[in-house]
Image (cartoon, rainbow, N blue to C red; front, top):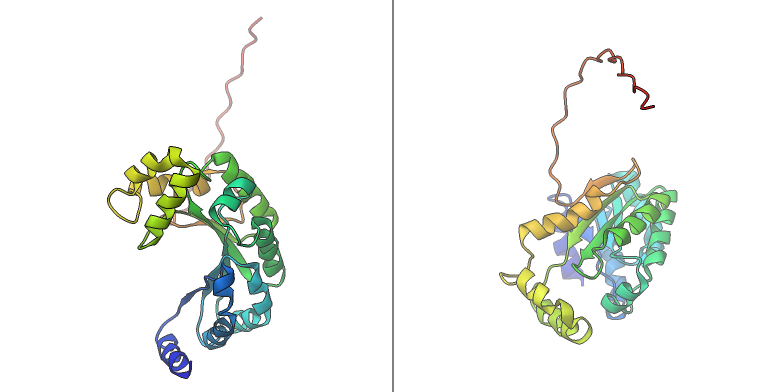
Length: 237
C-alpha cells in the first residue's frame, strides 16, 4: 500500500488528473478504504471525479477540500431512468434516481457536478423519449453539464455482453455483431449519433454539453441591424 501511494504521489505531482472512481458493484465497494487514501492524495492536484455511486457523498468533506484548493468537479454516470432497462443492464447498482439525488445534493453543497449519460446502447436506452426525460430531471437537479457516450466492449466484456444479449435480447444480436464487427468500439457515425441524442435535445441553458463535440470558435460581435418592417398578412376572406 505504501509503495502504491508513493508512486501515485509522484505521478500526481507531475500533472493534473481526472479521477475516475468505478466503485459500482458490491465487490468493488470493498476497496473504499483504498479509495479514501487516493482521494486524500488527490487533494494535491485534482480536477474531476467520475463515478456511478451516490456513495461519493460520504467523501463530501474531502471534495470540499479539493474545491477549495483547485478547480474540482464531480460526475455521475446515469444511463437511463427506464426501470426495466436499468435492472437488465446494471443489476446490483444504485438506482438511477438515487444518483440524481446525489447530483442535486453535491451541487447544493457547492461541488459542481455533471452527468454522463452512459453507456448509450442502441435498441436499449437510446430512445429520444428516454433521454429527454432523463435530461429534464437532471436539469431540475442542477447538473452543471451533461454528455453522452456509446457502449464500448473491451477485452472480456465483449463476450459477457454477447452472452447477455443472446439470453435476454436475441433480437439485437445481429445489430451488435454489425456494430462491433471491427473491434471494441462502434463506428464513428453511430457514436456521433448517440452523443447527438444528448446534444440535440432541448436542454436548460445551464447545461454545457460534453463528449464528442468539438470546441467552437467564438464569433465576432455583430452590429445590431434595424428590424425590417414585417409584411402584413392579407385577409383570406
